[in-house]
Length: 190
Image 1 (cartoon, rainbow, N blue to C red):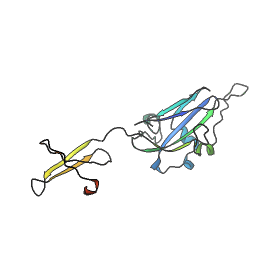
Image 2: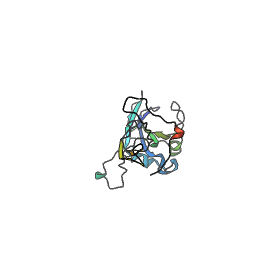
Image 3: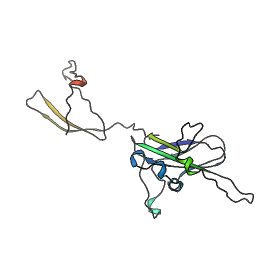
Image 4: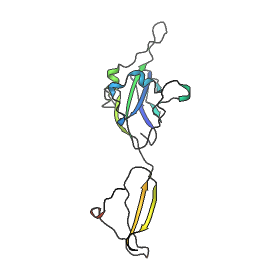
């Protein structure tokens, strides 16, 4: 997964189409609650011609324009630093002897099973895919003031996302920096 995109690479054992849906791992949804129609309504798919690999790249939970539908769409973007469960299924491009479509979808029990080995998948579910968060957080100085006397400075800092701030005091006159060990850091909550 990239910072705002999940990419599924797949191949099928015959020509067909694969469909996928992502849900946040902390959403409470489970594979047992993932019927085939729920995967199809996400509208993320790619056709497979029968050779090589194909990819499906999605940047939000559903590939829909909410202004064009009359249902509760999940027009939620993929969020960096979150985990997602991916559910995929496929149908083949079979036709009858009369030339009519005779689509065969994967059975729901297969879709709900874990992929396991990507070279020999045992199902269509991949759980807990981390989306990369490669953007560093922004650091904001909320307040800086002398405390007790002029030899102590108290800084109140804030990050634009969850994280840890480490600070080091430095002498501006070119002397060596003053450092402290992790055990000397005072824990406080705002």
